[in-house]
Image (tube, rainbow, N blue to C red; front, side, top):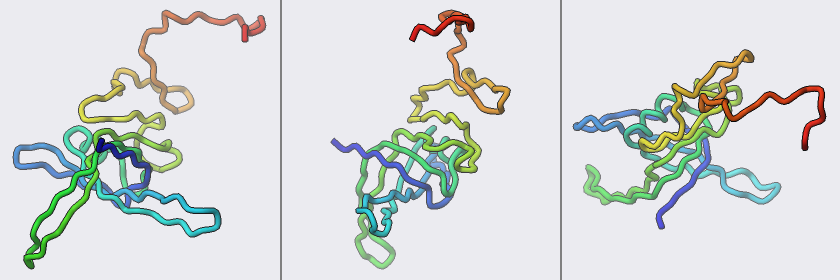
Length: 160
């Protein structure tokens, strides 16, 4: 199986482009910390990532340099001949699903503090219909149906 899961930080703002047929594509690099023993200096790998279609648009809209990101995808390898005639090999991760890893407050970015994941057209949240502003300035999500809930009396002990 070719499955990759990464958590790291963007090293630069993602770059959105479109193919000749209009398909959105974003490329970005994620710095992923390596596991090190206590007392050793931190090390990171810098991994090239490509996202397509809605996932590419989502990344470019809500992530920027320094944003913490979680993604799953697959490794894609390729090769090409450069201008000097040398054969070059490439290894990229193609992101299928991208998620937030920190709140807006922690990152300084402009996305929802309860950020949802967003995959290639398989958004698990209907972001527009489920977002409700809270008096505290935060954002909450609900299905819109609270018929299953009843108010708990405040003068009795809770049943747990």
